[in-house]
Length: 371
Ligand code: UD1
Ligand code: UDP
Image (cartoon, protein in one colour):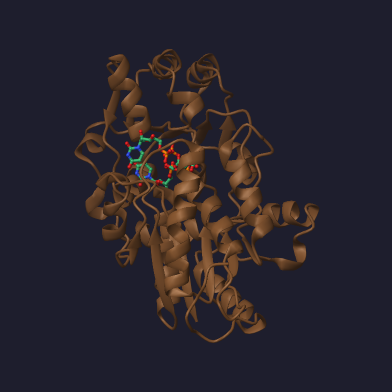
C-alpha cells in the first residue's frame, strides 16, 4: 500500500510521527509537507526530534491569507498526487493544509479511472464555533473522507450526528502516542529557566483572536502578572505582534522562542499550571496531570474539563486574571480517565487503513491524468 501523508503545521508533525513510523514498517509512505510552517523551530526541528523521515516533497506554500494558502496548496499538490499515484491520502487535524489536501485528493482521478481513498486522522472533533477557521477545515475534511479516524467517544458521537458513523472508527488520539514516546526522552530537555523557577506557569497563545491585536495581546500579558514565573514559548504570530507594537511583557513573563517538542513536554510535565489557547496543549496538560486554564469560551476537547483539570476562563483577560488570583496552584484530586486512548492509536490507524485499502478498488499503478 502506498500512502501519501500531508502535513504542514507544527501539531501535524507531532500527530504524523507515530503513524509514519508504524506505516513504514510494512508500507510505502510519501510524506508531503505543504510548507505552511517553515521556520526551523516550527518545522525542521520536529522532523529531527521525532525521528521522522524528511518530507519527500515540500510545496513551500509559506504564509498567506486563507484563500491564497488553500488555493496554492491545491494547485501544487495535484501534480504531486498524479506523479506518485498513491493508493490513499492521509490527512491530519484541522489546518488549511488539511482542507486543501482533502479537496485536492477528492478531485483526483487517475487515467485508468482509479482514485485514491482519503482518510482523516483526528476526525469528528467539533468546537461548535463557526467563527474558527479550523472548524470549517475539519468539517470539510471529515465529510470528504472515505474513512474518519476519531480520537474519542465524543468525536464518534459528533460523527454519528452528522451521518458519518458508518465510515468512522475510533482509534484513540495520536497525540497520546507522541506524548508517551516523548516522556521517555525528556530527561535532557528541560530548560535551565524552568529549573531556576520551580512552580512556574507555562503559557502558549497563538489564536489570531488573542494575539493579532497589540492591545489585546498586551491585556493578556498584563493578566499574567503574578508572583509566579510565566514561561511563554511564543508562536511566531505572537512574537510578530509583540515586535511590531514594541510591547514589553511584565517582568515575571519570560517570552522565549518556540521550543522543540521534547523540551515542550518536559516543560509541561514540571509546570504548576498551564495557560493556553492551543488544542494540543490542553490535551497534553491533561496527560501530564497539570491543571490548565484555557483562554476560550468553548473547547473541542471537552473531556479535559472533567474533574476540573481544564477550566475555560473565557476570552477576556479579566477572566484569566481573576482565575489566577483565585487559583492556589493545587492539582485537582479527581482521577483522570484514559479518554484519549492508550498510546497505540497509530497501530490501529494502520490496521484501519489496511482494511480500507482492501475494500477499495484502486486500479493498478500506471500513468496518470488530471481530468
Ligand atoms: C495554524 C493553524 C492552526 C494551528 C496552528 C498551529 C490554520 C487556519 N491554522 O495557525 O489551526 O493551531 O497553525 O501552530 O491552518 N509564521 C512564521 N513562521 C512559520 C509559521 C508561521 O513566521 O513557520 C507566522 C506568519 O506571520 C504567519 C502567521 O505566523 O502569517 C500565522 O501562520 P499560519 O500558518 O497562517 O497560521 P497559524 O496561526 O500558525
Ligand atoms: N509545541 C512545541 N513547542 C512549542 C509550543 C508547542 O513543541 O513551543 C507543541 C505542543 O507540545 C503540542 C503542539 O505543539 O504538541 C501544539 O501545537 P499548536 O499549539 O501550535 O497548535 P494546536 O494544537 O492549537 O493546533
